[in-house]
Length: 528
Image (tube, rainbow, N blue to C red; front, side, top):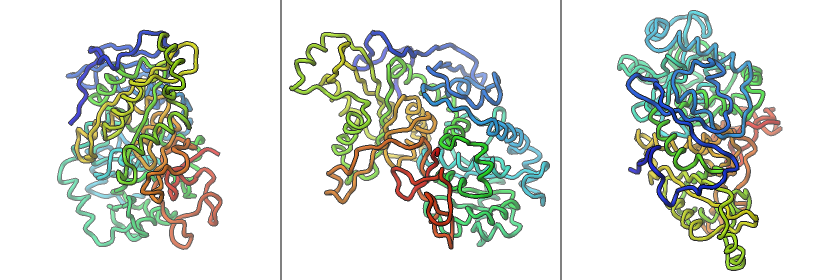
């Protein structure tokens, strides 16, 4: 496995050293030793460039529980939309409820072992959404967890997670001095998973009986009965169920905005519709001290001193339809011509001008972070921009471009803890960039753009009908209309069965819910 093998005191390898020139936007790290979250460890505090809104500081000014929580949300993102006062109020209420109902408290034990007959929402009653062990990649997991959290906020429940050993070391606890981890004790696990053995585990059936445990499947491949979760009538019935055991790999937030029972509260929480995951994700997913150390050391060594940080997230879903050469051509066409975030390279026609520029100092430094399972794209791009000068037309000198990669795992291993750690490091580093290019359909990219508050350029998947993908289809990339993730597989829009229609189609909908740029049948939130 490829691991990070440097620390903040080491000098970067020669090919990655930055020229000692004037910086247009000075952004360096301020490091100091402080007491960490545990008495046994110390953590490096990192001061990032432009500090955006930190929900934790909004909720508890000066009372963040550890250094990573205090500082890791200070990214270079230019997006600074504050959370609404109502969202802050909802989160404060949630934290009080979470601390009262967290695992192994008196309220938790009463709800779990002696199920109360009180309806959900009573002051003396606790009800839960348990996010069960997922099987997909980290991006899918984080998106579905944030969806489950929003549902918990809307229905006065407490979110608990049953991660398994491959995820417990990635994040800090969202609620300080509390836990969101479902107990590992087999007495608890046997009961919630054993309850699935009944034959009436479809949402529509269980919502109408007195069962205390309900298994809800909202993942890819869910059936028509599972999709009835999105009906207002079933939601009324679910208020009687204390424990919802949720399985999902989807960002189902957009569909919650289509449900009349939730719409008014959601509009108050999120008047800016493209900030839902931005705020919820930054609240839920604070890097653990272990993850933060990896993030900080890489950023300090390779990204901090650049004038501009560019993230390239490259995910190839079908290597036959999208061979490396085609994807590389697409990335360059997007970055150099359409998004114009990388300079063109010198050719024989402008060789004379390039020689003149070579005698001048570098005037502008771009650091490009390549996030990909494969090392091929990083190697090809680094060699290309090293061996050929950029064809800068400015008079101050050449634009220098450096490429960096934190990891290349080669294959996805979703149940491997060290693999998930490197995925989390890559995601967070991407979120610290100034501009992003992401791959269509990639939940990995969705999480990075949402945490960073960025509208990415989305690489289009080549159309396989053109010679197996050998010819690019349309534009290489297009700019996202919002930074919100896409709900890949929403319910069908058959008004006689499940769901409602969008984009002004028959059956109503919401103008804030539109089809995704990269997934034709998907849904995402936008501002109107």
